[in-house]
Image (cartoon, rainbow, N blue to C red; front, side):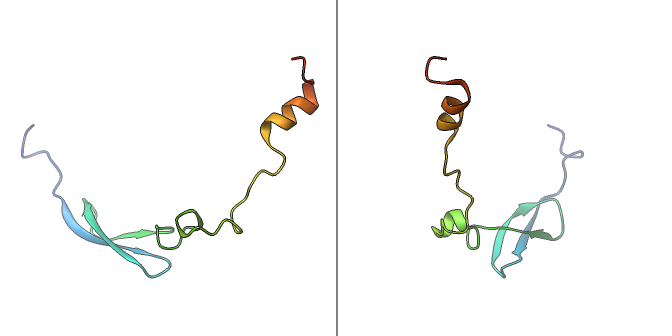
Length: 69
């Protein structure tokens, strides 16, 4: 790889909307993110705010096409 054409990487602090900060390498000066592991319901274990398919795909298929398909 040619050294002259590679972008310069900088250590930046990504700020989430919840207030958490994460450090990583990027070519941009500043990074803002909407969700992170601190505020996402999947990582927090809060399944009440997640959308869950209660009927299920298999049951929908069976009601539409029957069990013989």
